[in-house]
Amino acid sequence: MSDVIRIVDIDRNNTHVPVPPVPPVLPGARVDMRVRPGVLSDFAFVDALQKANKQGVGFMWEAAIKGHIEKGNLLIAEAIKVNREQSTVNSGEEGSAVDGSLFTNHSPRPVGYVLGADRYLKRDELGIIYQMCVAPEYRRSLVAANLLKAKFERSAYGCRLYCCWCAQDLAANRFWEAMGFVPLAFRTGGGRGKTKKDGKFRGRMHIFWQKRIREGDEGDLAQGGTAYWFPSLTGAGAIGEDRIVLPIPPGTHWGDAKPVVLPEGPRPRNGGEDEVKLLEDEVSRLEREKRAAKRGSGKGKGRGAAGQGLRKDSIELGGFRFGPGIADSPTAPDAGSRGVDVAEVERALKEAKRAVKKAKQKFDPAQVAFARELKDRWLEEVQQRPHLLAAGSEKYAVRRQIAPTHPPAPAPGSGVGSVVGSQDAEPGRVERLRLDAA
Image (cartoon, rainbow, N blue to C red):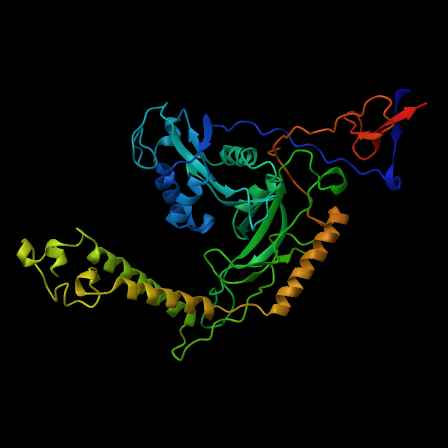
């Protein structure tokens, strides 16, 4: 018995599927930089950059950002050798950084960050980019592209897809398109984006982008590829309201106008004010009262003159005071000194938050079921006919390389046949078969 290897050419359906051009390998950034995991001391940089670009990256609370840092979800791009021309501000002060500090040409400083997780919506194969931002003077220098590639390489082994939500009116959509992301679906943004006069929606649309991050993964399930996926409904985030997600129809560009799909709006009160807005204002008031009550009831805090119902700039402290003192003010910051029960405020705050959640309207279950079926049917059709999706325009290869694992070859004469992947032939056209010959 001996093994004979035979090459068999297979032309499935007598059609030749053109192989898309392979994008070039991502070059290094145009600045001398490195990517490192974020630490808690990077919060000030991240917070300042997100506040300066809140229209593009949105907003994330301090607790959420620090929680992601502790989980290792933040990556920082750090310039090692800083160009003095890039480091100066418009004032012309030489050697002054964007944050106003002075540094040498060799002192590293953060210039950008990416915040994302390799698990999204309880799916192990799907990751998400929450925020990505680069300092203005370092943009268009491949800093963001190298950050994205580093994020892919640091993701869990089972993560095969990455996605992001991007507002339709942002130029950042061009970046995701250049990185090989595919626009799959869209959803309506904030629900209270209506004007009081004409009632027309003035909010934003969100485009759902997704990319296969493993090198060689073209989505062929028979070859171990990964199918695209998107949710049919989202309800988390800062909006806190249900949003139906719809697929982008074939032949429609992601920048074209999209239909507005919103749940029935909250019932306005007699004065025309939005009920949800009024309830949210009440939540904010109770949160301020809770913080003030904790300051006043804390041991060793809020005592002394302030704890006795006097302003820090009162007459007794050498200052001047006009109007009522803190003990007489209904909006006094030191509520704890006036006998406010912290537990009672917390109970009222919990009830107010529950009322806000209840006031936010939900979609009809029939609409949710329809959206889910539409999503499933659409993804099934796309899997069979990939050309329905928008043609990719990947500029650089940012996918991660994972060495393929091959099963061990059977022992000679064992009578067991196995399929061995061919590396010198076109995928899908040539198969190498190991056969036993008598």
